[in-house]
Length: 156
Image (cartoon, rainbow, N blue to C red; front, top):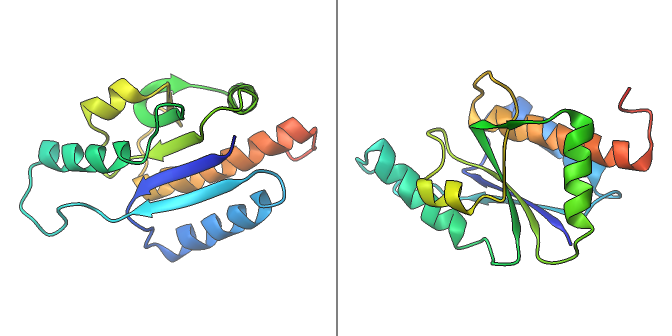
């Protein structure tokens, strides 16, 4: 089983791009992680927030298979400590079926259909972050989970 991180739109902030590259490099020898940045559907069109979330949800769902385990990041999700997060990831990875997908929605959140499909709905914090910042924090937490699993002193 591999890990895929799905998000809407490519990060634009240079420090986010650099941070993602940093964790991608550090994760490469530890876990097979694929990063997918989807083009924003309806960009430039005059859409309501709900229409935008629905279009984004449809694009995401096209890339989530029946066997895949979907970790959906949502501000109303369950908050996990880093050790709990690591245990959840590696327990799911041990199942061996499908792909473990982490989904970071667009700036307006995720559609009802995605909420319904999510196997695990988590929140990074009670605070609100930009979706780009959430992606960077998630990247560090996936790396931290791998380090916890390896028994490294990175997490102390």
